[in-house]
Length: 216
Image (tube, rainbow, N blue to C red):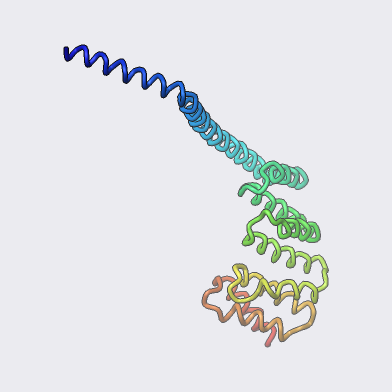
């Protein structure tokens, strides 16, 4: 008798399971499909990212090799192509700075300033690096013969206390002030670097030497 009741109970559970599956089975399958596809897509994305980064790293190495052994024009094109391909990824930003550096090596400070300006005005770039590019743009604009007074106005906020690139900005500000003949401002910028224990040792030494030369 017990076996009969067990069989009936089993049949009832099976019927309930079938009814439940007919009502909700398609949703369960849909969720399973989404989970599988999601996991597959994520795995594919990770592999794709790794593949892309390896390709970009290889292209960067090739650009560096071109810079060492090839012509300046070819090296510049290699870094510009990499920057265009990589977009705002880290290696793309490095390539943009490298391209600007090649203009400096070639003695074309106006072109270097333009390249740095493009980075500084790019809202997709992290502010820290935009500020650095701005400092570099101002520096090379000054070397290229830009208006010292206009450039001094631009460098002032970048040289303020707490700014990440303030020591470099203050040295640039001192150079611009000397060019414009404002010795007091130049000494002020240089003193802020020379007397700051937090400034890089090399910058403090350079600032102190220039101050001594000015005062002698």
